[in-house]
Length: 601
Image 1 (tube, rainbow, N blue to C red):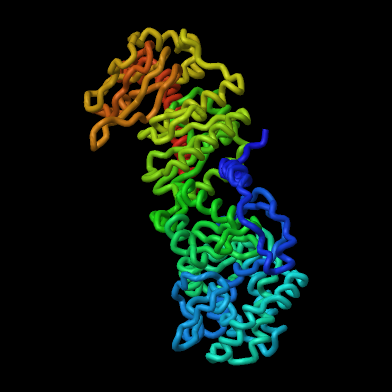
Image 2 (tube, helix red, strand yellow):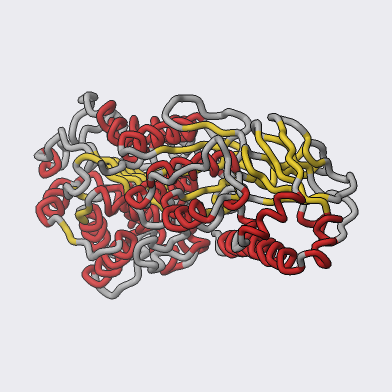
């Protein structure tokens, strides 16, 4: 079963929740817009990496209308410079409707570039020797934002040209004050044509994502607007983009935005994503009813308010690897190691850190979903995460449910239990999660586990290659010692004079931490050896060894091992070879882990 991103599922649910709202009406003062189907409804989210989530009528074409204003304003800033543009267009909120005649009483300068008067003034500042040349520069700039060549809806252009009497009056007033230096009719034609540029929801979400990405189109890599100018454009969008609803928008949504009477709303979350909602029914101030509702819910439910998200700029992924490269600390017999080397890649591990803001969380969730076909289990370690909002918790719960529906499992490691729900497997320690996932992979392969009765001496890795006589000799030298769960077999700091062969049960090796407590280094299973440093003359033990379950050991004293040099040097040499082979396996495993972690993101 295909795994769906929880963010895609969230958008589909959001679309379904907002679709029943049929309040408002299409813009009928422009005859062509009055013919638009009022039921159309699409939502797009575009990340600064170019990935787009979409639901609904996102490929339906509509005219950009007033969402063009910040783009033309940015182009004017590039053509004339900030100071020259500021002489013709202010940056103060008007608190008036989009078509209000808001001019400074002394200079005649429009209060901001987001109302019609300011937008017409911005159009008048575009370089070019003719209307056609100036419009081509506008269209090319918009196309860089969208990442494709755009066109014009000629019917809408003609409709606006024929009925835009109020805008004509504004244009002539601007000419009277000297804000427009030439015949206003040419600038008005440019303005009407730019408003009639045809886009779809995906185009506008990429335009917004380009602004969020410092003016660089995240899909094409093309610079649509210089970074310092982006800051000015976004600032004006924040304070003026939603007309006389601008204050309520900043408080309730908190994303720089611009609406258009064609039914679009473009919103920008700097550094993270761009949003476009298309729904033609407008409210009393000329904003899309569903567009405002969707953006409000996005901000509230995904914590997208710009005041709240600028907390952490470092990568949220501290490390990513899989169990083939970095297995658990459990030391396994050769058959299990070989099996995990083949299938360990089917369990990716993500160690996360910092604040899980939406864009960072989106990237992690999307990677998990994209790799789902090649994964059976997923581990996400949240212990170094400093902040995770309720929406992040819900998305992880939804991810676990989606993976489980596809026959997979999600393991969450979190020592603060910040995520509730039964759609994932909870762990307090990463190593415990890794070991559990290893067993799931091995069980799926049908790999045999070491039986509860343990192994024979001949089957122990230390005895590999010994003949019957050598095996019998060693057996006579070995003492037998039983242990219980939790029993201290070796204590760090005590003298070391024995080597231990684990025959039945499991033991854990741990070290004390400087700040208190201890850390498990590995879990040993039947067939493994510990305490080898006693044979090298090590005076003190460096770690603790405790029983994990009831078991049995065979114990060889360092003195008996040394005496083999005189009584049975071939046996001593064979034991040393096997100890060296076991050490080589441990070093190889650690080398693989270091390489995997060194290559982490």
